[in-house]
Image 1 (cartoon, rainbow, N blue to C red):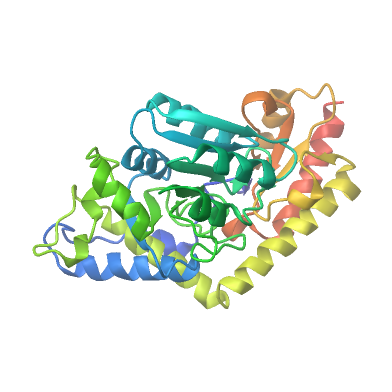
Image 2 (tube, helix red, strand yellow; image 1 turned 90 degrees about the horizontal axis):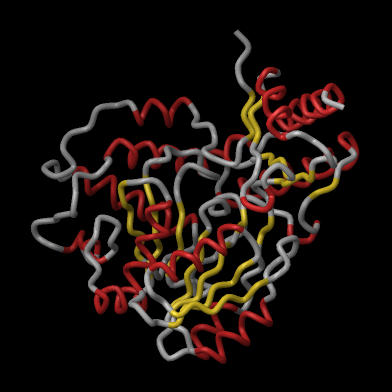
Amino acid sequence: MMKMLELIPGPSQMLPNVLKALGTPCGSSDLDPTFWDDYLALECNLQELLQAKNCNVVIQSGEAMLALWGALKSTIKPKDVVVCGVNGIYGEGFANMAKALGADVRVVQSDWRKTIDIEALCLEIRHSNPKLVTVVHCETPSGVLNNLNGVGEAVATYTTDGLFLVDFVSSGGGAPLNVDAWKIDLGLLGPQKALSGPPALAFTTVSEKAWKRINEVQYLGYDALQPFYRAALQQPRLLPYTHNWQAIRATLVACNNVKEEGGIDVVLHRHAEVSAFARRQVHETLQLTLYGDESAASPTVTAIELPEGTDWDALQEELCAQKLLVGGSYGPLKGRVLRLGHMGTQANKEVVVKAIHIIRAALEKLK
């Protein structure tokens, strides 16, 4: 039977050694002290990968969406001013989530096809003195990578005690990122995208300034960050639930795969090369248009505008029949955009070539 070719924008395909680690029995994370060796080793790996040496990395049990809600609930109270940079569905999502928590939300809207308007965002930060500023690094549904230059500095300089939150779930490990230099207080990630780990953990980089706020807010739900505050330094070491030790070990293997390839810089170069190659193939072979501007193209996902009149459901059915799985999109882009997820193990030119030829044949068949 022919194997399905997958270029979905996450979860990406795990390598056999990651799957093996995920299926290997562990002891009790509550009782076996060697659990903490793995937990702290993964934290160290993530600090290096994300250039977050000045932050802790909280590792929670649950898919990456857990980190989004946990970071918001742990740091804002009703009526707090929250500024949300929005140029896509996930940026909009942060604004809606903050509103649901009772925050006073100020949205800075930008063109969805371009990188976020940094000047407008920084002006709003200076004007509003927010408690929290949110930005999505990679807007996966539209394939746009946002420039974050100067935002963290603006938060640090022009707010009383504001925090800078960045969702880099689909860019961390696949796009250049420097948590410390960019002054990111809360950075959100999951292992299932560019790291090609299991969709079972949520990571949050937490600065000292963010810990101060977290300890003031004292939110204590399942997704709370506060119970992880200095947890490794306590005796006994206790977490709020039985952790997913297998997923931690599997993600450690995924991080080691990055090292075996030559390190994060080599991996970032591969993602950039494959992304540029995919965009050329869209123009030259499919003769279609990218959704976003070339200058804002993400190295982990490419969004393609479908020809007018294309029935996305029929196209998806035909692609599946040809053993290709790619992404559609959401919200106002639903039915208008097809996405190639060249992230993690899927950042592979050979896979992209095969996918492009299948897409071209399917579009021809459905004309």
